[in-house]
Length: 169
Image 1 (tube, rainbow, N blue to C red):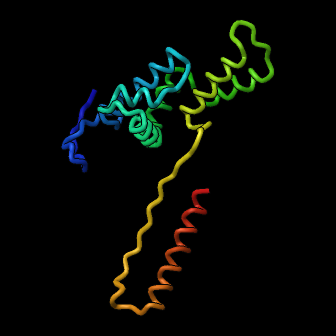
Image 2: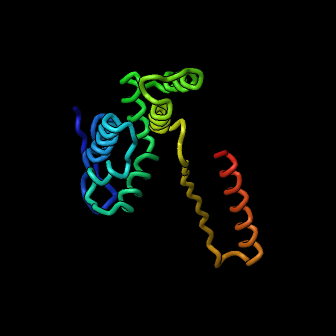
Image 3: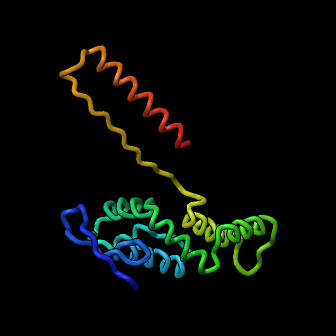
């Protein structure tokens, strides 16, 4: 395992980055998430955050879990681990299709379907909600322009923001 240190922008000082691009805590979060899933068949990101990060608050852990699951590096590593375990997205979708047409005897269809939905969520193919953070800022020296010019610049900024939002859809 290759470790790299970088200066974090937070006040916590240095963070350790693993060769998979995640920090040590992010890696532990993913490992805990997958261990819980293997044991229970359910994704428990809040529990993974509680076990990994220095908090006992479920609401703070919920925020951390949400942030982690939206980070591209964590999503990429989750998908790589799942795919390496034979849990590829196309295979899961194929099983969902087969399940829709099959009669399940040993395990209830509901149980199997819930498990497959959880796997789809890990692949981000069935997100319960999807968040996108978009930042846009405009800097204008308003002391050197008229009120009408400032108003026009603000309208232009709104048009640019609307165009960015359309690109996300």
